[in-house]
Image (cartoon, rainbow, N blue to C red; front, side):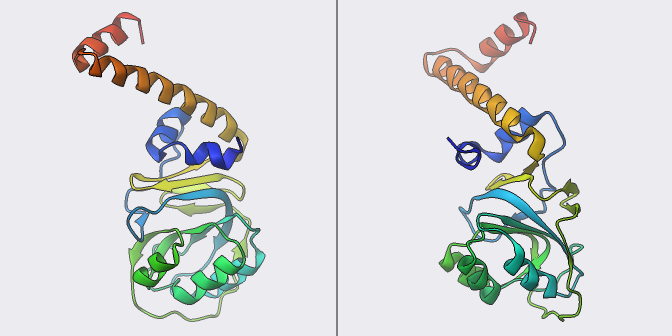
Length: 204
């Protein structure tokens, strides 16, 4: 199973807990449309609030399968919309994670393109700043590097450091197996307090 496939099989919450690290983005970063799931290696973009030229350049520079991770300073402008979505899909980009505003939510949902943003906004943007690419950016309070593994779902978004992603995914597999066993015991009639007391007795 590939890293991306393994990551897709886990929730953002499970990955956050398995990491033991500060990898969970601010809960203000939310999916643009319901049911969306985001997964792939980051391609980082430092832009400027109220300016979306950097995003146009990023669409052309990012590798297929990448998630564009853009720091726009949380600015309430429509930095991304239907036109950039179509262009990104043509390039094989896996989705967008942006600390800033986006618009055209209904159109983006109809196209099935994953977007996680800080806000929805309709104000238009200028095109002056070309952006800085593949350098660390801060999105949702977390520093993200190009190549870090991005996973987003209904619960939120995590950014797993690329050097630790495989290790975290292995630990996530273990957590899921343990939780499945706990749920089996609950269905067999044990209470959550029984399980908690057993957990404590085992010194965990």
